[in-house]
Length: 50
Image (cartoon, rainbow, N blue to C red; front, side, top):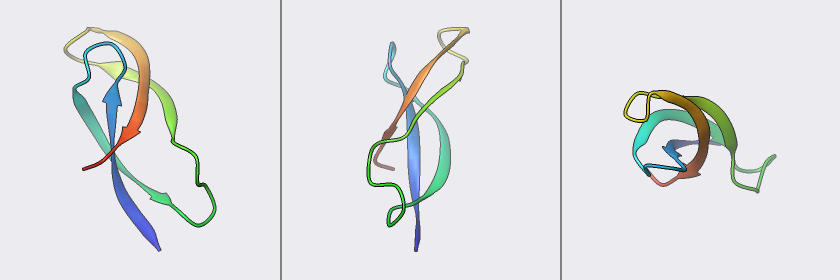
């Protein structure tokens, strides 16, 4: 039921985090504000393929 997804930084496009998401309950792309070690700042991270 839950699928593995990666979270990529909006500014540098690097994949920094992985998490799981229930595709049946949430169809839209996940956007979280997390810390990017390469940018050294809190930026928006969008869902991308693993």
